[in-house]
Length: 299
Figure (cartoon, rainbow, N blue to C red):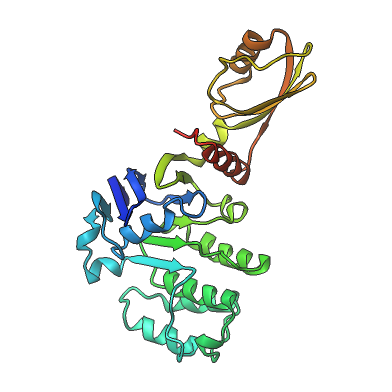
């Protein structure tokens, strides 16, 4: 595993920012951390790159205890944050020249290709760049030395749609060459290259799995009932937000297996029914889980 944590915990005063977080990020994955603000995503990332110290548990990055990452180890890790500080008095050209001297594996051809495609102005001072241009500059800096691990903390936040597309295009170019850990609220943009997903809520890791497995088990379900029915008290816990209006039942099935199994559950609860199931996007699944978290019923 490129990243592996066991029972990771962090407190800020009386606030439990992280509680018993255990996750594994396999090599060459594009692994997305999703959840609301305050779920613990940024705290997890900062622990992994040794910007914070854990109060409990352990974390290994590239097979190394993250508390003991050396300078040589950090040269294998790219890091991008929406709040990343830059040397404001340098131009884009000067910034890239400065970084080239620090990274033995710096690929100047890749740097130039990214700068052209992202339309970075070479002579512009970094403190004169828009937020979007700053993020593109930081992305070029993080990709050009071809890191083994690329960690991205809300890299798309505050960007307009065109810049988001350009940044994602830059990530897609490198996705097959590096392991990516990304925290983002822009789920529609990252869904196309994400291979694994972890959902966090109030400092807890609720689940992590491949995105294909998650897509497979979540379905929007529309049911036509044979008559007016009430929702039985004891119905499957995997039915999220079941609502009956007249002869119609709407819900999200979070453990979909196949139509036959679902039909058996529905007929046991309601008798004869007709139903349709619809696959859900990563954004739709995330919204469902966030709503469930607000009800305090996530386990």
